[in-house]
Image (cartoon, rainbow over all chains, first blue to last red; front, side):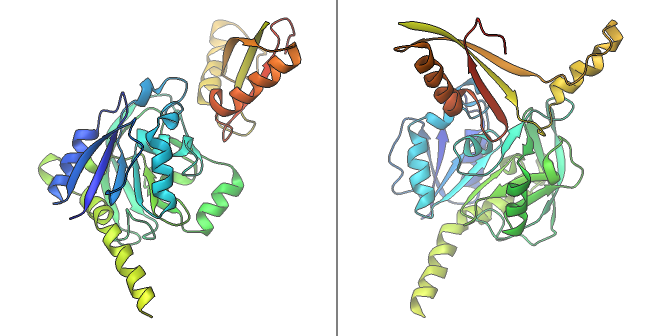
Amino acid sequence: MTRIGVVIFPGSNCEYDAALAMTQLGVDVDFVWHSVTDLSGFDGIILPGGFAHGDYLRPGALARFSPVMDAVARFAAEGGSVLGICNGFQVLTEAGLLPGALQKNRGLTFISEPTGLVVESTNSVLTHLAVRGQELTIPINHFSGAYTCDDETLEALEGNDQVVLRYRDNPNGSRADIAGVANAAGNVVGLMPHPERAMSTLLGSADGRVLLAGFVAAPRALQASAANAAAF
Amino acid sequence: MNYPVIVDVTLREGIADPEGATIERALPALGFTGVTNVRAGKSFRLDVEASDEEAALEKAAALAERLLSNPVIENAVARSPGVPK
C-alpha cells in the first residue's frame, strides 16, 4: 500500500489536515519529525503548511537546515514524489529543490480566501490526473506567497512546462500569476494554495482531490511507466 | 580576536519591494518630500572571531550568503560598523 510521510517541523500547523486528506484518499500516512534522516519505505513526502522554525529570518530559511531536508533532497534525487504546500513550498525553494523564491504579498496583507486556479501543466506528480486548463477553487492562507524569480528562470520554467498552476485573478503579486511550480523532472512540486483544505464540497470545495489523488497515485504510475519502458 | 561586523541584506535590483514602496508613499503625507528609491531590508550585527578584520568580513559574507540572505532575491554586504556603506 502506498505510504506517505508528512514532515513536521517545529511550527508546522497543517500536518493533520494533510494527513487526514491522505487517509481520505485511502493511503497509509505517517508523521515524520524534522530530525529524521531516513525516508526509506515512503512513496511520497509532504512538507505541510505552517511556520517552520517560527519563519524566523525568512519563511523556510531555517527549516532548510533541519536534518530531514538532506533526506528529502536524496529522496527527490532518487525520483521520489515530494510535495510542498504553502510553507512547505517556501522550504523547498529555500532548499534549492525548486527554483525561485516566495516574497511578501503585494499589498503587505495576510490573505486567507478561496482562489481560482488554472492547471497549466499536467507534467507533474501533483497535476497528472488533472486536465490542462482545468479550473479549480482552492484556498490560500499566507503572507509571503508572491512567487518571484529572475527572467532566465521564468523562461526556463515556461519552456520546460514547469509552471503547474496559475492564479486566475492574481491575489498576491506572484510573477506570471504563478501559484505552483515543479522541478524539471516533475517529481518535486510546490504550491501556495492548500489542496488538503479542499477535500469536501461540504467545506467549500473538493477541488484539491484531483491534485492529491494524483500525488498519491504518482509513485505507482511512475513505476508502471518505468516497467513499461523496461519491457520495451 | 572578535571583530564586530554588520551585514546588510537588501532586495536585489529589479525585485519588487512592496514594503519599501509603501514607506516611500507614506513619506509625503508626513511632510518629507524629495525622498525616493526607498528599499526595505534587514541588518544583522555579529561578533566574528578571526585573525584579522578582512578574514572576519569574509567569514560574515560567507554566512550571509548561506543563511542570512536568499541569493535568489537578496544581496548581502558585510562591513565594519565604523565604515559607512
